[in-house]
Length: 356
Image (cartoon, rainbow, N blue to C red):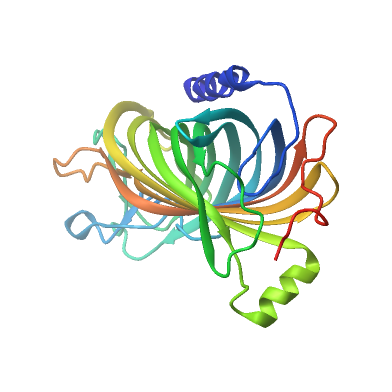
C-alpha cells in the first residue's frame, strides 16, 4: 500500500511541469488557450473477483465457497482533480497537456455458511500445512479495496476549435498518454463453528499498473433527434465522448496470514506475479455552463481491465496457492467543477460565435 501511494504522489507531482500563465480559453472538448482546472467527487462501482477460501463437500469432493460476491454492490466514494493547459501549436496541431488523478474506495461484507456431515466443511491454510474439517462453519468476510490512478496526456486537436454542434459526432482531438494506477485490496475472514472461533485469515493483494495509452475524443449531439436535441439545447447542455486504450505492466504482491484459533497454529505466505494487462476506457461528459469562467460536468468513466488478481488457494492435495487473474469492469461517476484561470472569459460570447 505504501509503495502505491508513493507512486501516485510522484505522478501527480509532475503536474508542475505543465504550469503556464492563464489566458483566454474556450472549452469545447479541450482547452484552447490558458489553463483549466477541475475538481470533483462521486461514486465508484468496482466488480472484483470472488474470494473462494473455505470449502465444502469434504476433501474427496472439495468445492470452494464464495466468501464474497463480485457484483455491482461493491461501491464507494470517489474523488478526483486535474488540470489542462495549452502548449501551443506543434506541426499544425493545437496541443494541450493534462494531468489528472483519482482515488476511490469500495468495500463489501459477506457471510457464508456451511453445514452437513461432520467432515463436510473444509479449511486449508494457504501454505497447505493445516487441513481441518468439521461442521457447521460460518465465515464473515470483509473486503476493502482502494482504486487509484494518475495520468499525464497530450491532446492533438484541430488548429481552430469548432463551436457548432455536430448532428451526431465530431472528432476533435487525438490522445497520447502515460498512466499509473492501482487496485489495493485488504481482505479479512473470521470463521466460527457454533460458539467456537475457528480461524482468522487476513490478506493484502496490491496490484500496480504502469503503461501508456492512445485515444480520441470529440463532441456528440442528439441533434439528429429533433425532440431530444432541442430539449438539450434549451437546457444549455453539451455532450462529449472520449475513448482510451492502453497496455500495462500489472505487478501484483500478495501477503497472507492465517491463524487457527482451535489449535496453536499460524502461517504466512508471500508471493508476486507480473502480467500484461489491457485497459480500455470510454468517458462520457454532459456539461452545463455556469458563468464566464466556470462550468459543471457530469462525468462517467466506463472501464474494462483485462487482468485483476484472483487467488487460487491450496487444495490440500499437492496443488499450491497461486495468483491467477480474470477481467473485471468498473464505472466511476463524478460531478466536476471546471474553472478557467485568469481574468478573460472561459467561453466565447454566444452572440458572436454561432452555436447550433
